[in-house]
Length: 122
Image (cartoon, rainbow, N blue to C red):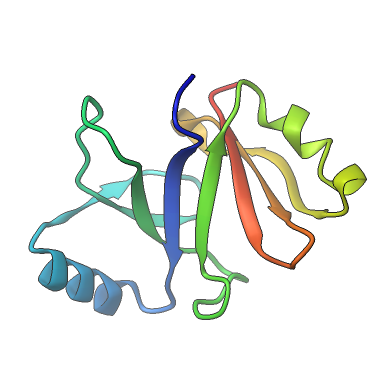
């Protein structure tokens, strides 16, 4: 069994400003990730090391502030867990969709109104 969190995102409005902030504070460069319709800059990651990787994200219609940090839970097929959201009292914000070579995600709201993600390579 692996750790439940596999990815995080910090949503931003001004990517150059946010990148400069995190690169300065953390002392590391961010790397551009190619993803359709979303600007993403990843914190450098070492796949063979413990801990979750993540990125800064700019996506139209999703403002920073408030609930602008997302935790992604790993699954075999995110549509399976996504189908459980409503029955558990939550709401699917965006049904399963492709993020290109990085797999697929579902965005959902929990019973407290917090957004979280489900990720799979299927």
